[in-house]
Length: 342
Ligand code: NAD
Ligand code: WQD
Image (tube, rainbow, N blue to C red; front, side, top):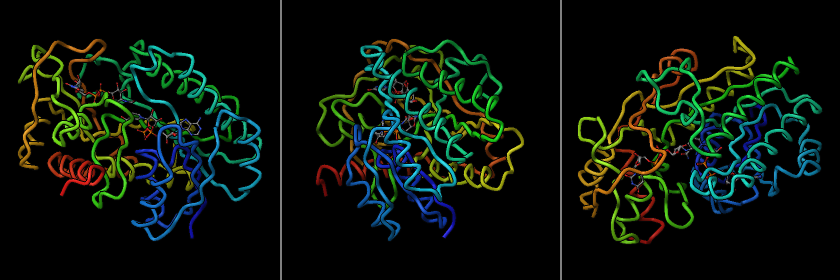
Protein backbone atom coordinates (compact mmCIF):
# COMPACT_ATOMS: atom_id res chain seq x y z
CA UNK A 1 0.00 0.00 0.00
CA UNK A 2 1.35 3.42 -0.98
CA UNK A 3 0.95 6.61 1.05
CA UNK A 4 -2.24 7.88 2.68
CA UNK A 5 -3.89 10.75 0.79
CA UNK A 6 -6.69 13.01 2.06
CA UNK A 7 -9.26 13.77 -0.62
CA UNK A 8 -11.45 16.66 0.56
CA UNK A 9 -14.75 16.85 -1.31
CA UNK A 10 -14.12 13.22 -2.22
CA UNK A 11 -17.77 12.19 -2.45
CA UNK A 12 -18.29 14.99 -5.01
CA UNK A 13 -18.02 14.82 -8.78
CA UNK A 14 -14.29 15.17 -9.50
CA UNK A 15 -13.20 13.97 -6.04
CA UNK A 16 -14.93 10.60 -6.38
CA UNK A 17 -13.29 9.95 -9.75
CA UNK A 18 -9.93 10.93 -8.28
CA UNK A 19 -10.40 8.61 -5.30
CA UNK A 20 -10.91 5.77 -7.80
CA UNK A 21 -7.72 6.60 -9.70
CA UNK A 22 -5.68 6.95 -6.50
CA UNK A 23 -6.90 3.59 -5.19
CA UNK A 24 -6.22 2.00 -8.59
CA UNK A 25 -2.64 3.25 -8.28
CA UNK A 26 -2.31 1.66 -4.83
CA UNK A 27 -2.76 4.75 -2.65
CA UNK A 28 -4.73 4.63 0.58
CA UNK A 29 -7.49 7.23 0.53
CA UNK A 30 -9.41 9.01 3.27
CA UNK A 31 -12.28 11.23 2.17
CA UNK A 32 -13.56 14.25 4.07
CA UNK A 33 -16.86 15.70 2.91
CA UNK A 34 -19.82 17.31 4.67
CA UNK A 35 -22.17 16.09 1.90
CA UNK A 36 -23.26 19.67 1.21
CA UNK A 37 -23.31 18.87 -2.52
CA UNK A 38 -22.98 15.08 -2.75
CA UNK A 39 -24.20 11.89 -1.12
CA UNK A 40 -22.47 8.97 0.56
CA UNK A 41 -23.63 6.78 -2.38
CA UNK A 42 -20.38 7.77 -4.09
CA UNK A 43 -18.57 5.59 -1.56
CA UNK A 44 -20.54 2.57 -2.82
CA UNK A 45 -19.62 3.47 -6.40
CA UNK A 46 -15.93 3.85 -5.53
CA UNK A 47 -16.01 0.50 -3.74
CA UNK A 48 -17.77 -1.27 -6.62
CA UNK A 49 -15.21 0.05 -9.12
CA UNK A 50 -12.05 -0.52 -7.08
CA UNK A 51 -12.98 -3.22 -4.57
CA UNK A 52 -11.85 -0.85 -1.81
CA UNK A 53 -14.06 1.35 0.36
CA UNK A 54 -12.10 4.46 1.31
CA UNK A 55 -12.24 5.74 4.88
CA UNK A 56 -14.82 8.51 5.16
CA UNK A 57 -15.11 11.35 7.66
CA UNK A 58 -18.19 13.55 7.40
CA UNK A 59 -17.58 17.07 8.68
CA UNK A 60 -17.28 20.69 7.64
CA UNK A 61 -13.72 21.78 6.84
CA UNK A 62 -14.61 25.30 8.00
CA UNK A 63 -14.65 23.98 11.58
CA UNK A 64 -11.01 24.32 12.65
CA UNK A 65 -11.31 22.08 15.73
CA UNK A 66 -12.68 19.24 13.58
CA UNK A 67 -9.90 19.67 11.03
CA UNK A 68 -7.30 19.49 13.84
CA UNK A 69 -8.97 16.38 15.27
CA UNK A 70 -8.82 14.82 11.81
CA UNK A 71 -5.06 15.44 11.48
CA UNK A 72 -4.57 13.95 14.96
CA UNK A 73 -6.55 10.85 13.98
CA UNK A 74 -4.57 10.27 10.75
CA UNK A 75 -0.89 10.80 11.68
CA UNK A 76 0.25 8.86 8.59
CA UNK A 77 -1.27 11.40 6.20
CA UNK A 78 1.19 12.28 3.42
CA UNK A 79 -0.66 14.66 1.10
CA UNK A 80 -3.95 16.42 0.44
CA UNK A 81 -6.05 16.96 -2.65
CA UNK A 82 -8.41 19.81 -1.85
CA UNK A 83 -11.60 19.65 -3.94
CA UNK A 84 -14.06 20.77 -1.26
CA UNK A 85 -15.63 24.08 -2.25
CA UNK A 86 -18.90 25.56 -3.41
CA UNK A 87 -18.90 25.98 -7.19
CA UNK A 88 -22.20 27.43 -8.44
CA UNK A 89 -21.29 30.64 -10.26
CA UNK A 90 -24.83 32.13 -10.21
CA UNK A 91 -25.43 31.36 -6.54
CA UNK A 92 -22.10 32.97 -5.68
CA UNK A 93 -23.41 36.27 -7.09
CA UNK A 94 -26.51 36.02 -4.86
CA UNK A 95 -24.68 34.76 -1.77
CA UNK A 96 -21.07 35.92 -2.05
CA UNK A 97 -20.25 35.57 1.65
CA UNK A 98 -21.34 31.92 1.64
CA UNK A 99 -18.73 31.35 -1.08
CA UNK A 100 -15.96 33.44 0.43
CA UNK A 101 -16.42 31.81 3.84
CA UNK A 102 -16.58 28.23 2.64
CA UNK A 103 -13.92 28.30 -0.05
CA UNK A 104 -11.38 30.45 1.80
CA UNK A 105 -11.81 29.26 5.40
CA UNK A 106 -11.63 25.55 4.47
CA UNK A 107 -8.33 26.14 2.66
CA UNK A 108 -6.88 28.26 5.47
CA UNK A 109 -7.78 25.62 8.06
CA UNK A 110 -6.04 22.96 6.00
CA UNK A 111 -2.91 25.10 5.50
CA UNK A 112 -2.64 25.85 9.20
CA UNK A 113 -2.91 22.15 10.03
CA UNK A 114 -0.41 21.24 7.30
CA UNK A 115 2.14 23.43 9.10
CA UNK A 116 1.15 22.20 12.55
CA UNK A 117 1.12 18.46 11.68
CA UNK A 118 3.93 18.50 9.09
CA UNK A 119 1.95 17.38 6.06
CA UNK A 120 3.70 19.43 3.40
CA UNK A 121 1.97 18.57 0.09
CA UNK A 122 -1.32 19.84 -1.34
CA UNK A 123 -2.97 19.74 -4.75
CA UNK A 124 -5.53 22.51 -5.17
CA UNK A 125 -8.56 22.54 -7.52
CA UNK A 126 -8.38 25.78 -9.44
CA UNK A 127 -10.17 26.77 -12.61
CA UNK A 128 -9.60 28.23 -16.06
CA UNK A 129 -12.02 30.92 -14.93
CA UNK A 130 -8.93 32.73 -13.53
CA UNK A 131 -7.93 33.59 -17.13
CA UNK A 132 -11.26 35.25 -18.06
CA UNK A 133 -11.26 35.82 -21.82
CA UNK A 134 -7.58 35.36 -22.71
CA UNK A 135 -6.10 37.46 -25.50
CA UNK A 136 -4.16 34.54 -26.96
CA UNK A 137 -5.50 31.03 -27.54
CA UNK A 138 -4.76 28.33 -26.60
CA UNK A 139 -4.17 29.76 -23.13
CA UNK A 140 -0.92 28.95 -21.32
CA UNK A 141 -0.20 29.08 -17.59
CA UNK A 142 1.65 32.36 -18.20
CA UNK A 143 -1.47 34.20 -19.36
CA UNK A 144 -2.46 37.08 -17.08
CA UNK A 145 -5.05 36.51 -14.37
CA UNK A 146 -7.99 38.80 -15.20
CA UNK A 147 -10.51 40.32 -12.78
CA UNK A 148 -12.98 37.60 -11.80
CA UNK A 149 -16.48 37.63 -13.30
CA UNK A 150 -18.08 36.19 -10.13
CA UNK A 151 -17.44 35.78 -6.40
CA UNK A 152 -16.92 32.06 -7.11
CA UNK A 153 -14.19 32.85 -9.65
CA UNK A 154 -12.72 35.32 -7.21
CA UNK A 155 -12.46 32.63 -4.51
CA UNK A 156 -10.25 30.60 -6.87
CA UNK A 157 -8.00 33.61 -7.48
CA UNK A 158 -7.81 34.45 -3.76
CA UNK A 159 -7.10 30.80 -2.89
CA UNK A 160 -4.21 30.79 -5.36
CA UNK A 161 -2.92 33.97 -3.67
CA UNK A 162 -3.31 32.42 -0.20
CA UNK A 163 -1.31 29.42 -1.42
CA UNK A 164 1.36 31.61 -2.97
CA UNK A 165 1.81 33.62 0.23
CA UNK A 166 1.75 30.45 2.36
CA UNK A 167 4.57 28.73 0.47
CA UNK A 168 6.51 31.93 0.84
CA UNK A 169 6.15 31.96 4.62
CA UNK A 170 6.21 28.15 5.13
CA UNK A 171 9.06 27.00 2.87
CA UNK A 172 8.40 23.29 3.55
CA UNK A 173 4.98 23.44 1.91
CA UNK A 174 4.64 22.30 -1.70
CA UNK A 175 1.60 23.16 -3.80
CA UNK A 176 0.33 22.15 -7.20
CA UNK A 177 -2.66 24.16 -8.44
CA UNK A 178 -4.55 22.46 -11.25
CA UNK A 179 -6.60 24.77 -13.43
CA UNK A 180 -9.44 22.71 -14.83
CA UNK A 181 -11.16 23.70 -18.04
CA UNK A 182 -14.66 22.20 -18.43
CA UNK A 183 -14.87 18.77 -16.76
CA UNK A 184 -17.68 16.61 -18.18
CA UNK A 185 -18.81 13.00 -18.40
CA UNK A 186 -18.79 10.18 -15.88
CA UNK A 187 -16.84 7.05 -15.05
CA UNK A 188 -17.14 4.50 -17.89
CA UNK A 189 -18.83 2.06 -15.48
CA UNK A 190 -21.60 4.64 -14.80
CA UNK A 191 -21.15 3.86 -11.10
CA UNK A 192 -20.12 7.43 -10.23
CA UNK A 193 -20.85 10.74 -11.95
CA UNK A 194 -22.11 14.27 -11.49
CA UNK A 195 -25.19 14.98 -9.31
CA UNK A 196 -26.37 18.50 -10.11
CA UNK A 197 -28.86 19.83 -7.57
CA UNK A 198 -31.90 21.54 -9.09
CA UNK A 199 -31.70 23.06 -12.54
CA UNK A 200 -28.20 22.51 -13.96
CA UNK A 201 -26.13 25.57 -14.81
CA UNK A 202 -23.57 23.65 -16.84
CA UNK A 203 -24.07 22.63 -20.44
CA UNK A 204 -23.64 18.86 -20.41
CA UNK A 205 -25.91 18.05 -17.44
CA UNK A 206 -28.54 20.26 -19.09
CA UNK A 207 -28.11 18.37 -22.37
CA UNK A 208 -28.44 14.94 -20.71
CA UNK A 209 -31.44 16.04 -18.61
CA UNK A 210 -33.14 17.43 -21.72
CA UNK A 211 -32.47 14.19 -23.59
CA UNK A 212 -33.89 12.26 -20.61
CA UNK A 213 -37.08 14.36 -20.70
CA UNK A 214 -36.50 16.16 -17.37
CA UNK A 215 -36.12 19.52 -19.12
CA UNK A 216 -38.29 20.62 -22.01
CA UNK A 217 -35.68 22.55 -23.90
CA UNK A 218 -32.00 23.41 -23.84
CA UNK A 219 -31.29 27.09 -24.28
CA UNK A 220 -28.16 27.66 -26.35
CA UNK A 221 -26.80 30.93 -25.05
CA UNK A 222 -25.81 32.91 -28.14
CA UNK A 223 -25.13 32.10 -31.80
CA UNK A 224 -23.57 35.44 -32.68
CA UNK A 225 -20.12 34.94 -31.19
CA UNK A 226 -17.09 35.34 -33.46
CA UNK A 227 -16.60 31.53 -33.64
CA UNK A 228 -17.01 29.16 -36.62
CA UNK A 229 -20.69 28.35 -35.87
CA UNK A 230 -21.47 31.42 -33.71
CA UNK A 231 -21.79 29.51 -30.42
CA UNK A 232 -19.25 29.80 -27.59
CA UNK A 233 -16.21 27.54 -27.46
CA UNK A 234 -14.84 25.63 -24.44
CA UNK A 235 -12.33 22.87 -23.71
CA UNK A 236 -14.41 19.92 -22.44
CA UNK A 237 -12.23 17.49 -20.49
CA UNK A 238 -13.25 13.94 -19.51
CA UNK A 239 -13.57 13.70 -15.72
CA UNK A 240 -11.77 10.35 -15.45
CA UNK A 241 -8.87 11.72 -17.51
CA UNK A 242 -8.87 14.79 -15.26
CA UNK A 243 -8.76 12.55 -12.18
CA UNK A 244 -5.62 10.80 -13.47
CA UNK A 245 -3.77 14.12 -13.61
CA UNK A 246 -4.21 14.38 -9.83
CA UNK A 247 -2.42 11.06 -9.35
CA UNK A 248 0.48 12.42 -11.43
CA UNK A 249 0.52 15.62 -9.38
CA UNK A 250 0.55 13.68 -6.10
CA UNK A 251 3.42 11.51 -7.38
CA UNK A 252 5.36 14.63 -8.31
CA UNK A 253 4.89 16.18 -4.85
CA UNK A 254 5.62 12.99 -2.90
CA UNK A 255 8.75 12.25 -4.93
CA UNK A 256 9.81 15.89 -4.53
CA UNK A 257 10.18 16.27 -8.28
CA UNK A 258 8.61 19.72 -8.25
CA UNK A 259 10.98 22.43 -9.37
CA UNK A 260 9.28 25.22 -7.43
CA UNK A 261 7.23 25.06 -4.25
CA UNK A 262 4.22 26.36 -6.11
CA UNK A 263 3.40 25.05 -9.59
CA UNK A 264 0.36 25.52 -11.86
CA UNK A 265 -0.93 23.32 -14.64
CA UNK A 266 -3.75 23.69 -17.14
CA UNK A 267 -5.89 20.57 -17.41
CA UNK A 268 -7.82 20.39 -20.64
CA UNK A 269 -7.72 18.55 -23.95
CA UNK A 270 -6.08 21.34 -25.93
CA UNK A 271 -9.11 21.42 -28.24
CA UNK A 272 -12.05 23.81 -28.26
CA UNK A 273 -15.62 22.66 -29.01
CA UNK A 274 -18.61 24.88 -29.56
CA UNK A 275 -21.93 24.51 -27.75
CA UNK A 276 -23.62 23.41 -30.98
CA UNK A 277 -20.83 20.90 -31.67
CA UNK A 278 -21.41 19.37 -28.21
CA UNK A 279 -25.16 19.11 -28.82
CA UNK A 280 -24.71 17.59 -32.30
CA UNK A 281 -22.02 15.16 -31.15
CA UNK A 282 -24.25 14.08 -28.26
CA UNK A 283 -27.12 13.43 -30.69
CA UNK A 284 -24.86 11.49 -33.05
CA UNK A 285 -23.33 9.16 -30.43
CA UNK A 286 -26.51 8.53 -28.43
CA UNK A 287 -29.10 8.58 -31.24
CA UNK A 288 -31.27 10.76 -28.96
CA UNK A 289 -32.32 14.18 -30.19
CA UNK A 290 -32.02 17.23 -27.97
CA UNK A 291 -34.72 19.87 -28.17
CA UNK A 292 -32.84 23.16 -28.22
CA UNK A 293 -33.47 26.82 -28.94
CA UNK A 294 -30.99 29.60 -29.61
CA UNK A 295 -31.43 32.46 -27.14
CA UNK A 296 -29.38 35.51 -26.19
CA UNK A 297 -25.91 35.38 -24.67
CA UNK A 298 -25.56 34.54 -20.97
CA UNK A 299 -24.12 37.37 -18.86
CA UNK A 300 -20.50 36.82 -17.87
CA UNK A 301 -19.76 34.17 -20.53
CA UNK A 302 -16.46 34.38 -22.38
CA UNK A 303 -16.41 33.83 -26.15
CA UNK A 304 -13.84 31.09 -26.41
CA UNK A 305 -11.24 29.43 -24.21
CA UNK A 306 -9.20 26.30 -24.57
CA UNK A 307 -6.00 25.10 -22.99
CA UNK A 308 -2.43 24.86 -24.04
CA UNK A 309 -1.74 21.59 -22.23
CA UNK A 310 1.92 21.20 -23.13
CA UNK A 311 3.14 21.93 -19.60
CA UNK A 312 0.92 19.20 -18.07
CA UNK A 313 1.81 16.85 -20.93
CA UNK A 314 5.55 17.32 -20.50
CA UNK A 315 5.98 17.91 -16.78
CA UNK A 316 3.21 15.76 -15.31
CA UNK A 317 3.47 13.18 -18.09
CA UNK A 318 -0.31 13.38 -18.41
CA UNK A 319 -2.52 13.77 -21.45
CA UNK A 320 -6.29 13.69 -21.91
CA UNK A 321 -7.07 10.48 -23.77
CA UNK A 322 -10.85 10.15 -24.11
CA UNK A 323 -12.70 11.54 -27.15
CA UNK A 324 -15.59 13.99 -26.87
CA UNK A 325 -17.78 11.23 -28.34
CA UNK A 326 -16.94 8.67 -25.64
CA UNK A 327 -17.16 11.30 -22.92
CA UNK A 328 -20.64 12.43 -23.97
CA UNK A 329 -21.71 8.80 -24.15
CA UNK A 330 -20.46 8.29 -20.58
CA UNK A 331 -22.49 11.34 -19.48
CA UNK A 332 -25.58 9.84 -21.12
CA UNK A 333 -25.02 6.40 -19.57
CA UNK A 334 -24.79 8.04 -16.14
CA UNK A 335 -27.98 10.08 -16.73
CA UNK A 336 -29.82 6.95 -17.91
CA UNK A 337 -28.74 5.10 -14.79
CA UNK A 338 -29.89 7.95 -12.52
CA UNK A 339 -33.30 8.04 -14.20
CA UNK A 340 -33.75 4.31 -14.68
CA UNK A 341 -33.81 4.64 -18.49
CA UNK A 342 -32.94 1.41 -20.39
P1 NAD B 1 -18.74 18.99 -6.14
O1 NAD B 1 -19.69 19.97 -5.56
O2 NAD B 1 -19.30 17.80 -6.83
O3 NAD B 1 -17.71 18.48 -5.04
C1 NAD B 1 -17.27 19.30 -3.99
C2 NAD B 1 -17.50 18.53 -2.69
O4 NAD B 1 -17.04 19.30 -1.61
C3 NAD B 1 -18.98 18.23 -2.45
O5 NAD B 1 -19.12 16.84 -2.23
C4 NAD B 1 -19.31 19.03 -1.18
O6 NAD B 1 -20.24 18.36 -0.36
C5 NAD B 1 -17.94 19.16 -0.53
N1 NAD B 1 -17.78 20.34 0.33
C6 NAD B 1 -18.02 21.63 0.01
N2 NAD B 1 -17.73 22.43 1.05
C7 NAD B 1 -17.28 21.63 2.05
C8 NAD B 1 -16.81 21.87 3.36
N3 NAD B 1 -16.76 23.09 3.89
N4 NAD B 1 -16.43 20.81 4.12
C9 NAD B 1 -16.48 19.56 3.62
N5 NAD B 1 -16.90 19.27 2.38
C10 NAD B 1 -17.30 20.30 1.59
O7 NAD B 1 -17.78 19.82 -7.15
P2 NAD B 1 -16.77 19.28 -8.24
O8 NAD B 1 -17.32 19.59 -9.58
O9 NAD B 1 -16.32 17.92 -7.92
O10 NAD B 1 -15.58 20.32 -8.01
C11 NAD B 1 -14.47 20.00 -7.18
C12 NAD B 1 -13.54 21.19 -7.15
O11 NAD B 1 -13.12 21.51 -8.48
C13 NAD B 1 -14.14 22.47 -6.58
O12 NAD B 1 -13.15 23.11 -5.82
C14 NAD B 1 -14.50 23.27 -7.80
O13 NAD B 1 -14.51 24.64 -7.53
C15 NAD B 1 -13.35 22.89 -8.72
N6 NAD B 1 -13.68 23.06 -10.13
C16 NAD B 1 -14.77 22.43 -10.65
C17 NAD B 1 -15.09 22.59 -12.01
C18 NAD B 1 -16.32 21.97 -12.58
O14 NAD B 1 -16.77 22.40 -13.64
N7 NAD B 1 -16.89 20.94 -11.98
C19 NAD B 1 -14.28 23.39 -12.83
C20 NAD B 1 -13.15 23.99 -12.26
C21 NAD B 1 -12.85 23.83 -10.91
C1 WQD C 1 -20.41 26.04 -21.26
C2 WQD C 1 -20.99 26.72 -22.50
C3 WQD C 1 -22.58 28.45 -21.99
C4 WQD C 1 -25.67 25.95 -20.28
C5 WQD C 1 -18.40 27.14 -15.74
C6 WQD C 1 -17.79 28.04 -14.71
C7 WQD C 1 -16.32 27.79 -14.62
C8 WQD C 1 -16.01 26.31 -14.41
C9 WQD C 1 -16.74 25.45 -15.38
C10 WQD C 1 -15.73 25.89 -12.07
C11 WQD C 1 -21.11 28.24 -22.34
C12 WQD C 1 -23.24 27.31 -22.75
C13 WQD C 1 -24.50 26.38 -20.87
C14 WQD C 1 -26.89 26.02 -21.03
C15 WQD C 1 -25.65 26.91 -22.89
N1 WQD C 1 -16.44 25.87 -13.12
N2 WQD C 1 -24.49 26.85 -22.15
N3 WQD C 1 -26.82 26.48 -22.32
O1 WQD C 1 -19.54 28.71 -18.21
O2 WQD C 1 -17.66 27.56 -19.44
O3 WQD C 1 -17.80 27.42 -16.99
O4 WQD C 1 -18.13 25.77 -15.39
O5 WQD C 1 -14.67 26.40 -11.88
O6 WQD C 1 -15.85 28.55 -13.57
O7 WQD C 1 -18.04 29.38 -15.06
O8 WQD C 1 -19.42 26.18 -18.35
O9 WQD C 1 -21.04 24.39 -18.74
O10 WQD C 1 -21.86 26.58 -17.76
O11 WQD C 1 -21.13 26.50 -20.12
O12 WQD C 1 -25.65 27.32 -24.06
O13 WQD C 1 -27.96 25.67 -20.54
O14 WQD C 1 -22.32 26.23 -22.68
O15 WQD C 1 -23.10 29.67 -22.43
O16 WQD C 1 -20.83 28.82 -23.57
P1 WQD C 1 -18.63 27.59 -18.32
P2 WQD C 1 -20.92 25.87 -18.67
